[in-house]
Image 1 (cartoon, rainbow, N blue to C red):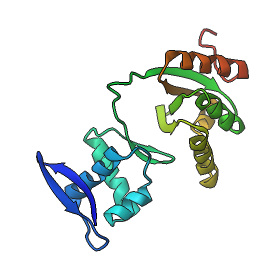
Image 2 (cartoon, rainbow, N blue to C red; image 1 turned 120 degrees about the vertical axis):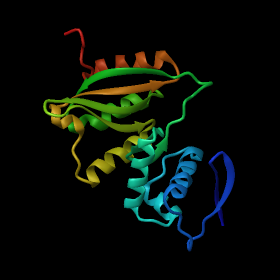
Image 3 (tube, helix red, strand yellow; image 1 turned 90 degrees about the horizontal axis):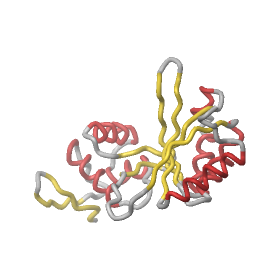
Image 4 (cartoon, one colour; image 1 turned 30 degrees about the vertical axis):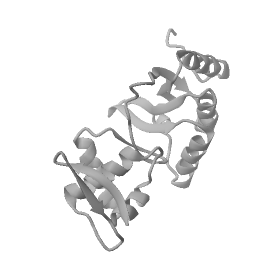
Length: 197
């Protein structure tokens, strides 16, 4: 079964991957990169491991090596994604400072995505480790529900727990007006920190 075509050393080669064949090293990483680059949705580590006929830990290591080569791969709660630069569609980005309890996280995220805005990440300033950032990449209520479920299922804590609810989000939208509307809604809900205080 043909799984993918990829570019290696500036020449096109076919990779025929069956359940019996395992790719090694750089060939496997190029295969994984091609899968991510051609996908329109996140792909879990388990799915990538199945496609490459390797363990989940090998995938984690391969993703680390690809990121070290400056490949724009992001691990999200939904899986790995390859960040594409939108050449035709200019996106507007804004950083907002927020505060809320862990119980209000879902409401905050839904409020943002309901306006067609993507939450790229969450950042905190830790007193020992400095700036800490975690990718979220939620764009709709389904993504938010998956993110919240994963936090609960793994008994993880929100990064903002380390700063008593204070955190920063990078938000992205197709129109600047969407970002302003989100700010208004967050302020009205009491989640937006007034940076002029």
